[in-house]
Length: 107
Image (cartoon, rainbow, N blue to C red; front, side):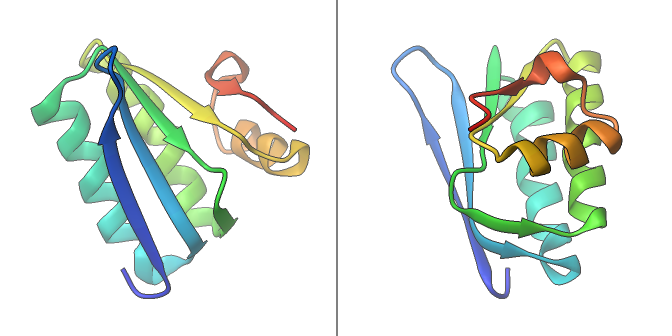
C-alpha cells in the first residue's frame, strides 16, 4: 500500500483484527481488498473486526470494499464488524451498504 499500511492481528478469542493505518485511497484498494478477502475466504475466523481507529480517510472505492466485506463474510459465515469510526464516516459506510448493526464503537 502506498500511504497506508494494514496491521493484522488475532485476539485471544480468535477474532481477526484488520487495522488500516493512514489515508486509504484508490491506490490502496487492492491491498486492502486482498487482505480482507484472504481473511474471510482462507483464514475463516468466527469474527473479523476492521478497526478504523487510525484510518485517516476512506475514498468511495474503499467504502465499497468494506461494504462488500460484510456481504462476503455473510456468505462464508464470518461475522464482520467495523469499529471506531466517527459519526460522519459511519454514515458514509452505511450509505455504501454497511448494515448499521455492523458499525460498532462510533465516537
